[in-house]
Structures are given as C-alpha cells and as structure tokens.
Length: 74
Image (cartoon, rainbow, N blue to C red; front, top):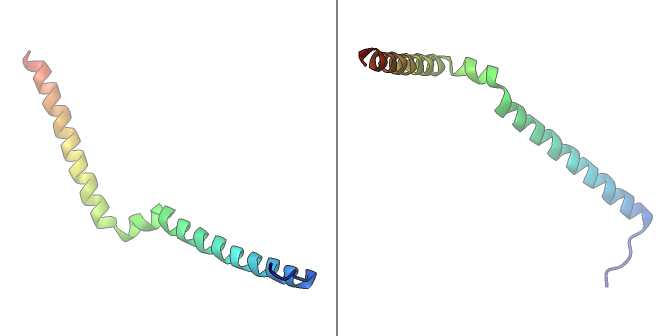
C-alpha cells in the first residue's frame, strides 16, 4: 500500500498538474490557430489558390454552358 502524502505534497502535485495543463492548453490553442488561420494560408499559397479558382471557374462555366446547350438542342 503506498504511503499517504502530506497536504503539502498534494498541493505541490496539484500545482504541477495545473502548470502542465496550462502548457498543454496553450500548445493546443497555438496549433488550432495555425490550422484555422485561413487568411494567412491563403496569402502564403496565393498562386495555388488563384490557379485552383481559375480551373474551378472554367470547369463550372463549361459545365453550365454544356448543360444549357443540351437543352437548347432539344
């Protein structure tokens, strides 16, 4: 059976756990901020975003034009 801890040891353990938890929460918060900062990601990947938007616009526009032309033929 483990020896009982004194109140001072328990307080010390609680304070250490609080420090570790605070560190973990701050670390997680910074990681979430990195992932969800879409403006920064967009700025850093501007060229890829523009190319993707252009291709998507071309495909969507071509798809709509193709569908409209099918209905006009009938």
